[in-house]
Every structure is written in structure tokens, then in C-alpha cells.
Image (tube, rainbow, N blue to C red; front, side, top):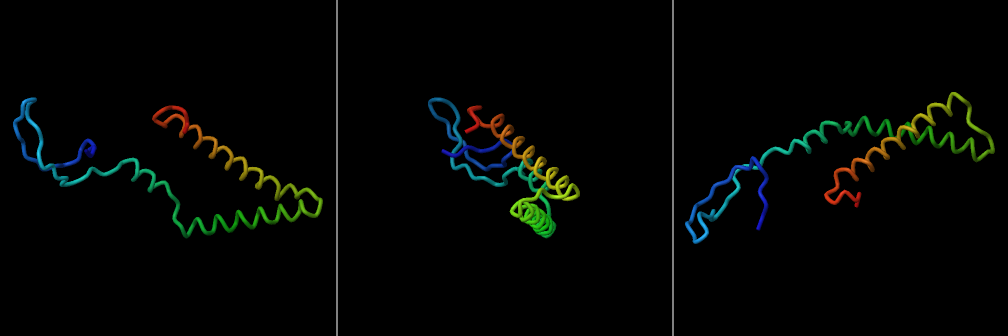
Length: 110
């Protein structure tokens, strides 16, 4: 047995049975548009833009890592944006984990 989402257009025949009418030979004509999927896709960044963002992030973190390898702390002009980037990343991850817990069917965060 397959579950059909609300809004799905179907074609079917009806047969009368002991327990009432039943649908026979159900055929899906048109599935509804997934609002959640469209919203998620619209929030995604363009892959070409992401290449630049990722490469810049790697370059920044490599620079900071190299400074630490030489036993020095990074300069303030490098340390502040790096710390801001890492804090934003940590907050985004915490938010995703929280949302996952809230939206999981069992509520356990699975």
C-alpha cells in the first residue's frame, strides 16, 4: 500500500464492497509541488558562488593554521574575521541540530 499526499491528483474506479465503497486501480495523474523542497532549493547558493566562498575560507584557515604552527597568535585583522566565521558556523550547526530534534517524529533527535 502506498500513501498519497494531500493535493495529489488521481484517477480511480469505485467498487462497492461489504464495508462500503473502495477505490480500485488508483493511478497518480499529477503529484503536488513540494513547498518545502522548493523553499530549500531557493535558499541554496549558486555553486559558482560557493566555490569562491569555500576557497576563500580554506585560504583564511590555512593562513591562521600556519601562524599557529609557528607558535604565534594571528594578527587581530586576521583573527577577528576568522573567529566571526567560526562562531557563525558553530551557531548554524547548533540551529540545525535543534531543528532536527524539534522536527523528528519521535522528538528524540534521532
